[in-house]
Image (cartoon, rainbow, N blue to C red; front, side, top):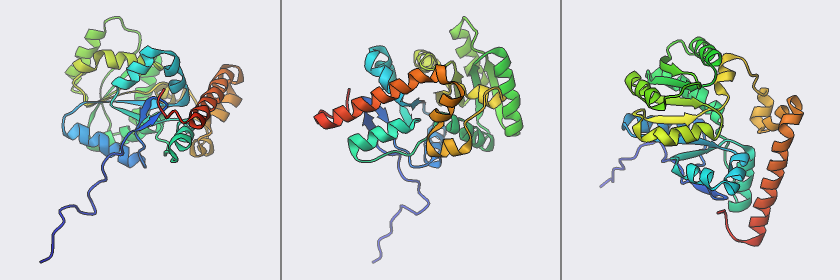
Length: 262
Protein backbone atom coordinates (compact mmCIF):
# COMPACT_ATOMS: atom_id res chain seq x y z
CA UNK A 1 0.00 0.00 0.00
CA UNK A 2 1.28 3.43 -0.92
CA UNK A 3 1.42 5.83 2.01
CA UNK A 4 -0.06 9.20 1.19
CA UNK A 5 1.78 12.23 2.53
CA UNK A 6 -0.63 15.10 3.10
CA UNK A 7 2.20 17.63 2.90
CA UNK A 8 2.67 18.88 -0.67
CA UNK A 9 5.45 20.70 -2.40
CA UNK A 10 3.27 23.81 -2.36
CA UNK A 11 3.06 23.92 1.44
CA UNK A 12 5.13 26.86 2.70
CA UNK A 13 7.97 26.06 5.11
CA UNK A 14 7.35 26.95 8.74
CA UNK A 15 8.70 30.21 10.08
CA UNK A 16 12.31 29.82 11.25
CA UNK A 17 13.15 29.47 14.91
CA UNK A 18 14.28 32.80 16.40
CA UNK A 19 17.99 33.25 17.07
CA UNK A 20 19.37 34.99 20.16
CA UNK A 21 21.72 37.77 19.07
CA UNK A 22 23.27 39.21 22.22
CA UNK A 23 20.01 39.08 24.14
CA UNK A 24 17.72 40.15 21.29
CA UNK A 25 15.51 37.66 19.43
CA UNK A 26 15.81 37.74 15.62
CA UNK A 27 13.90 35.52 13.19
CA UNK A 28 16.22 34.35 10.36
CA UNK A 29 13.83 34.53 7.41
CA UNK A 30 15.43 33.19 4.25
CA UNK A 31 13.47 35.44 1.88
CA UNK A 32 11.08 38.36 1.91
CA UNK A 33 8.38 36.02 0.57
CA UNK A 34 8.78 33.84 3.65
CA UNK A 35 8.32 36.87 5.89
CA UNK A 36 5.31 38.03 3.86
CA UNK A 37 3.71 34.58 4.14
CA UNK A 38 4.08 34.75 7.91
CA UNK A 39 2.29 38.11 7.97
CA UNK A 40 -0.38 36.85 5.58
CA UNK A 41 -1.07 33.89 7.87
CA UNK A 42 -1.40 36.24 10.85
CA UNK A 43 -3.96 38.37 9.02
CA UNK A 44 -5.88 35.34 7.75
CA UNK A 45 -6.09 33.96 11.29
CA UNK A 46 -7.15 37.38 12.63
CA UNK A 47 -4.29 37.26 15.11
CA UNK A 48 -2.00 40.11 16.18
CA UNK A 49 1.70 40.52 15.55
CA UNK A 50 4.15 43.30 16.43
CA UNK A 51 7.30 43.32 14.28
CA UNK A 52 10.49 45.28 14.83
CA UNK A 53 13.58 45.87 12.69
CA UNK A 54 16.74 44.89 14.57
CA UNK A 55 20.06 46.54 13.78
CA UNK A 56 23.35 46.69 15.74
CA UNK A 57 22.62 50.13 17.18
CA UNK A 58 19.30 48.93 18.58
CA UNK A 59 21.00 45.90 20.15
CA UNK A 60 23.83 48.06 21.52
CA UNK A 61 21.37 50.51 23.07
CA UNK A 62 19.42 47.61 24.60
CA UNK A 63 22.55 46.62 26.55
CA UNK A 64 22.60 50.01 28.26
CA UNK A 65 18.87 50.68 28.48
CA UNK A 66 16.93 47.97 30.37
CA UNK A 67 13.63 49.57 29.36
CA UNK A 68 14.54 49.18 25.68
CA UNK A 69 15.60 45.57 26.24
CA UNK A 70 12.26 44.88 27.94
CA UNK A 71 10.45 46.62 25.09
CA UNK A 72 12.13 44.46 22.43
CA UNK A 73 11.12 41.37 24.36
CA UNK A 74 7.48 42.45 24.05
CA UNK A 75 7.63 42.28 20.25
CA UNK A 76 6.55 39.16 18.37
CA UNK A 77 9.07 39.15 15.52
CA UNK A 78 12.44 40.82 15.10
CA UNK A 79 13.89 40.96 11.60
CA UNK A 80 17.54 41.23 10.59
CA UNK A 81 17.65 44.86 9.50
CA UNK A 82 21.42 45.40 9.65
CA UNK A 83 24.37 43.50 8.21
CA UNK A 84 26.04 43.72 11.63
CA UNK A 85 23.31 41.52 13.09
CA UNK A 86 24.00 38.90 10.42
CA UNK A 87 27.74 39.08 11.13
CA UNK A 88 27.08 38.72 14.87
CA UNK A 89 24.91 35.66 14.24
CA UNK A 90 27.69 34.08 12.19
CA UNK A 91 30.27 34.77 14.90
CA UNK A 92 28.08 33.52 17.75
CA UNK A 93 26.15 30.69 16.10
CA UNK A 94 28.16 29.76 13.02
CA UNK A 95 25.46 30.92 10.62
CA UNK A 96 24.61 34.30 9.20
CA UNK A 97 21.17 35.65 8.31
CA UNK A 98 19.61 37.04 5.20
CA UNK A 99 18.87 40.72 5.64
CA UNK A 100 15.16 41.54 5.75
CA UNK A 101 15.25 45.30 6.11
CA UNK A 102 12.37 47.22 7.63
CA UNK A 103 12.26 49.65 4.71
CA UNK A 104 12.19 46.96 2.02
CA UNK A 105 9.65 44.90 3.95
CA UNK A 106 7.47 48.02 4.24
CA UNK A 107 7.31 48.50 0.47
CA UNK A 108 6.96 44.80 -0.33
CA UNK A 109 4.19 44.48 2.23
CA UNK A 110 2.34 47.43 0.71
CA UNK A 111 2.54 45.73 -2.67
CA UNK A 112 1.06 42.57 -1.14
CA UNK A 113 -1.56 44.67 0.66
CA UNK A 114 -2.66 46.17 -2.66
CA UNK A 115 -3.07 42.67 -4.11
CA UNK A 116 -4.94 41.34 -1.07
CA UNK A 117 -6.92 44.55 -0.49
CA UNK A 118 -5.74 44.82 3.09
CA UNK A 119 -6.49 48.14 4.78
CA UNK A 120 -3.42 50.23 5.64
CA UNK A 121 -3.12 52.95 8.29
CA UNK A 122 -0.19 55.41 8.16
CA UNK A 123 0.72 56.98 11.50
CA UNK A 124 3.52 59.45 12.09
CA UNK A 125 5.92 61.90 10.44
CA UNK A 126 5.06 65.56 9.83
CA UNK A 127 1.70 66.49 8.29
CA UNK A 128 3.48 67.38 5.04
CA UNK A 129 5.51 64.17 4.92
CA UNK A 130 2.53 62.00 5.81
CA UNK A 131 0.45 63.59 3.02
CA UNK A 132 3.30 63.32 0.51
CA UNK A 133 3.87 59.68 1.49
CA UNK A 134 0.22 58.87 0.84
CA UNK A 135 0.40 60.51 -2.58
CA UNK A 136 3.61 58.68 -3.42
CA UNK A 137 2.31 55.31 -2.30
CA UNK A 138 -0.95 55.73 -4.21
CA UNK A 139 1.10 56.32 -7.35
CA UNK A 140 3.30 53.28 -6.67
CA UNK A 141 0.39 51.00 -5.80
CA UNK A 142 -2.85 52.24 -7.46
CA UNK A 143 -4.90 49.49 -5.78
CA UNK A 144 -3.59 50.20 -2.29
CA UNK A 145 -6.31 50.79 0.34
CA UNK A 146 -5.06 53.52 2.65
CA UNK A 147 -7.98 53.51 5.07
CA UNK A 148 -6.64 56.08 7.51
CA UNK A 149 -3.76 58.32 8.51
CA UNK A 150 -2.53 60.62 11.22
CA UNK A 151 0.66 62.65 11.42
CA UNK A 152 2.93 62.29 14.44
CA UNK A 153 1.90 65.59 16.05
CA UNK A 154 -1.01 64.48 18.18
CA UNK A 155 -1.79 64.64 21.90
CA UNK A 156 -4.54 62.08 22.38
CA UNK A 157 -3.31 58.54 21.67
CA UNK A 158 -6.61 56.99 22.70
CA UNK A 159 -8.37 58.98 20.00
CA UNK A 160 -5.82 57.80 17.44
CA UNK A 161 -6.41 54.18 18.48
CA UNK A 162 -10.14 54.74 18.04
CA UNK A 163 -9.50 56.10 14.55
CA UNK A 164 -7.35 53.09 13.67
CA UNK A 165 -10.03 50.68 14.84
CA UNK A 166 -12.79 52.60 13.07
CA UNK A 167 -10.81 52.38 9.83
CA UNK A 168 -10.73 48.55 10.14
CA UNK A 169 -7.06 48.62 9.11
CA UNK A 170 -5.23 45.30 8.81
CA UNK A 171 -1.77 46.89 8.83
CA UNK A 172 -0.55 49.82 10.91
CA UNK A 173 2.79 51.45 10.08
CA UNK A 174 4.21 53.90 12.62
CA UNK A 175 6.89 56.42 11.59
CA UNK A 176 8.06 58.21 14.73
CA UNK A 177 11.69 57.20 14.86
CA UNK A 178 13.07 54.39 17.00
CA UNK A 179 12.47 53.55 19.79
CA UNK A 180 9.61 56.07 20.15
CA UNK A 181 7.54 54.26 17.50
CA UNK A 182 8.04 50.86 19.17
CA UNK A 183 7.20 52.36 22.56
CA UNK A 184 3.93 53.74 21.18
CA UNK A 185 2.97 50.44 19.60
CA UNK A 186 3.79 48.47 22.75
CA UNK A 187 1.78 50.86 24.89
CA UNK A 188 -1.35 50.59 22.73
CA UNK A 189 -1.02 47.21 21.00
CA UNK A 190 -3.62 45.53 23.21
CA UNK A 191 -6.23 48.14 22.19
CA UNK A 192 -5.44 48.15 18.45
CA UNK A 193 -7.53 45.68 16.44
CA UNK A 194 -5.23 45.59 13.40
CA UNK A 195 -3.41 42.30 12.86
CA UNK A 196 0.00 43.77 12.09
CA UNK A 197 1.96 46.70 13.53
CA UNK A 198 5.50 47.78 12.73
CA UNK A 199 7.63 50.89 13.18
CA UNK A 200 9.09 52.07 9.88
CA UNK A 201 11.31 55.01 10.83
CA UNK A 202 11.97 57.27 7.85
CA UNK A 203 10.13 55.13 5.29
CA UNK A 204 7.38 57.74 4.87
CA UNK A 205 10.03 60.27 3.86
CA UNK A 206 11.40 57.80 1.33
CA UNK A 207 7.89 57.13 -0.02
CA UNK A 208 7.34 60.87 -0.37
CA UNK A 209 10.65 61.36 -2.16
CA UNK A 210 12.01 63.65 0.55
CA UNK A 211 14.84 61.26 1.41
CA UNK A 212 16.99 59.46 -1.12
CA UNK A 213 17.64 55.77 -0.53
CA UNK A 214 21.12 54.36 -0.91
CA UNK A 215 21.80 53.15 -4.48
CA UNK A 216 20.88 49.55 -5.20
CA UNK A 217 24.50 48.34 -5.09
CA UNK A 218 24.85 49.52 -1.48
CA UNK A 219 21.51 47.95 -0.52
CA UNK A 220 22.38 44.61 -2.10
CA UNK A 221 25.73 44.42 -0.33
CA UNK A 222 24.43 45.62 3.02
CA UNK A 223 26.71 48.66 2.97
CA UNK A 224 24.11 51.43 3.13
CA UNK A 225 25.91 52.72 6.21
CA UNK A 226 28.88 53.66 4.00
CA UNK A 227 26.61 55.65 1.68
CA UNK A 228 24.95 57.41 4.62
CA UNK A 229 28.36 58.10 6.18
CA UNK A 230 29.53 59.72 2.94
CA UNK A 231 26.37 61.82 2.70
CA UNK A 232 26.24 62.87 6.37
CA UNK A 233 29.71 62.30 7.88
CA UNK A 234 29.21 64.33 11.07
CA UNK A 235 25.80 62.88 11.85
CA UNK A 236 26.79 59.28 11.10
CA UNK A 237 30.27 59.10 12.62
CA UNK A 238 28.95 58.33 16.11
CA UNK A 239 26.97 55.42 14.65
CA UNK A 240 30.16 53.93 13.21
CA UNK A 241 31.75 54.02 16.66
CA UNK A 242 28.75 52.16 18.02
CA UNK A 243 29.05 49.55 15.26
CA UNK A 244 32.72 48.99 16.13
CA UNK A 245 31.93 48.63 19.84
CA UNK A 246 29.10 46.25 18.96
CA UNK A 247 31.35 43.94 16.96
CA UNK A 248 34.12 44.05 19.55
CA UNK A 249 31.67 42.99 22.25
CA UNK A 250 30.30 40.19 20.07
CA UNK A 251 33.81 38.90 19.43
CA UNK A 252 34.62 39.17 23.13
CA UNK A 253 31.49 37.22 24.02
CA UNK A 254 32.46 34.48 21.53
CA UNK A 255 36.01 34.25 22.86
CA UNK A 256 34.83 34.11 26.46
CA UNK A 257 32.37 31.34 25.63
CA UNK A 258 29.70 32.95 27.78
CA UNK A 259 27.00 32.66 25.07
CA UNK A 260 24.84 34.96 22.99
CA UNK A 261 22.71 36.56 25.69
CA UNK A 262 23.43 39.95 27.24
